[in-house]
Image (tube, rainbow, N blue to C red):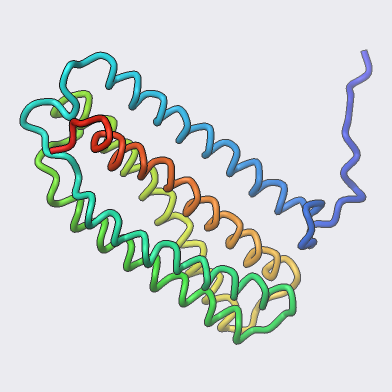
Length: 204
């Protein structure tokens, strides 16, 4: 039986278009991560149907005001990503550095507000089903953000040192694509955790 093979020799490894191998890999990563977060949202509503009171008695809902304020630096960080992305397409070192630094600082501000919010929770991941799903969503999204910021920091170091070529420029581009995804995916997660209980009349 003849083994089937796929010829990818004509694909460019350093390409800013959707035909680039690195871009395709990052896109598929976003699909996988998106499916994971979609499952978490489904689990959230499934668990809600299993109890009469949501959040359960004794559990205080996460701080909706603080979480809303945290959206400001989160959305603004996309400006830095866009700036770095456009500079990468032109090979402009200064623009890439400034854009990624802006993204890093604003994203760190978002994480700082999340840390404050997390400390205010009066339940843990092991308290009940509500605590488990809220902590799971916050942990996994935070984990993805921290991982991406580490990549951004590494790219900043590479560009600052001047040791970059076509692949590194594409790396800056796909890093921005992933960041847009992490910002976008937080919107339905944020709406689910902070606004659903409020509109369902269970917000406390």
